[in-house]
Length: 368
Ligand SMILES: NC(=O)c1ccc[n+]([C@@H]2O[C@H](COP(=O)([O-])OP(=O)(O)OC[C@H]3O[C@@H](n4cnc5c(N)ncnc54)[C@H](O)[C@@H]3O)[C@@H](O)[C@H]2O)c1
Image (tube, rainbow, N blue to C red; front, side, top):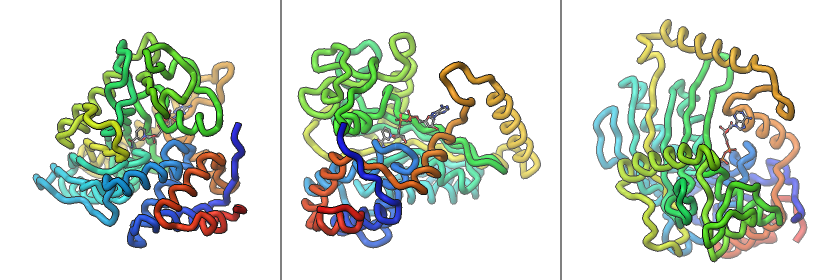
C-alpha cells in the first residue's frame, strides 16, 4: 500500500490555493475551487477532492477548461432557467447556478435549473447543501461527458459515465438529509484512489476489457479499459442503470443538449450537465405552519427509521448525510489523509501549471 500524508487542514488549504493559482484564476475562484475540492476530501469523498487537480490541469492545458468564466443565462422563464456553464470551473458554475435557482425558488416557490456545459461539478452534494442552507429541498440529475466508463445492466462495455443523483432535504433543528451518490456501484475516482494505493476494488464492481469480472482497478484507470457496473448487483443492476439513464436523459439530453456518446475519448475535459429542481417547502405547504408540519412529520419518520435495531456487523442505522458529517468533523480536527501517489500527481500538475512543487510541499508542511 502507498504511504499516506496526513496534512492539517489549514496547510492543505494554503497548498491547494497555490496550485489553483496556476490556472490563472482570480482569488474568488481560487477560494471556490480549492475550498470545494478540500471539502470533498473532508467529507470522505477523496474521489472528488484534490486528486482531481491533475485531471483539471490536463483539461486546462488542452483548452477544455476555461478559468474565470461564469454562467450565462440562455433562457429565463422565471421559475425555469436554462444555463450555459461555458466550460468554466464547476466549483464556480455550480455555485452560481444554484444561487440563481435559489433566488427564483424563493420568489416563485420552486425553480427548475437546467445547466449544460459546466466543467466537472465535483461532489454534487455541495449543491444540495447550498440549496438546503437556503431552506430549499432539491433534486439533481447529472450526466458526465468524458470517456464512457459504466456498462448498462447486461451490457459488456462502457456506454455512459458514473452519472450521480442527489437529493437534499433541510429540516429545522437537525442537519439536512443529503443523499448523493454515483449510479455506478463505486465512483470512478475510487478506482483511481484504489490504484494509487495499490489496492484491489471489491468484487462485483468492474468488468475487464473483454467484459469479464475483475477486481483490478487498472481497467477503470489505464487502457485497455473495461467498465464499472451500475449499482444494484446482479439482481438489482437494472435499478442503478435505470437511474443512470434518467440522469443522461434529464441532465444530458434535456438540460445540456449533450449526452455521452463517445466521440473523442482522448479529451481530458470532464463536462457535467445537471437538471435540478429546487422547492421551497413553505410554498408547497401553504405557509410557515405547513412547513413546520412537514418538518415534524419528516423528523418523526427519521426517528422511526433509526429505531430499527442494528444488524450484526452494522452500527446504528444512519441517514444520508451522516457519514459525510462524521468524516468532516474527524478530518477537520485530525488532518486530511492524502496518499503519496496522488500527492506526487498533484505536484506534477502544479509544475505543469508553472507552480513550484517545492513551494506546494512547503505550504503543506512536507519535505521535498
Ligand atoms: N461530478 C461528477 O461527474 C460526479 C460523478 C460521479 C460521482 N460524483 C460524486 O462522487 C461522490 C461519491 O459518490 P459515491 O457513489 O462514491 O458515494 P457513496 O457510495 O459513498 O454514497 C454516498 C451517499 O450514501 C450515504 N451513506 C453512506 N453510508 C450510509 C449509511 N451507512 N447509511 C445511510 N446512508 C449512507 C451518504 O450520506 C451519501 O449520501 C458524490 O459526492 C457524487 O456526487 C460526481
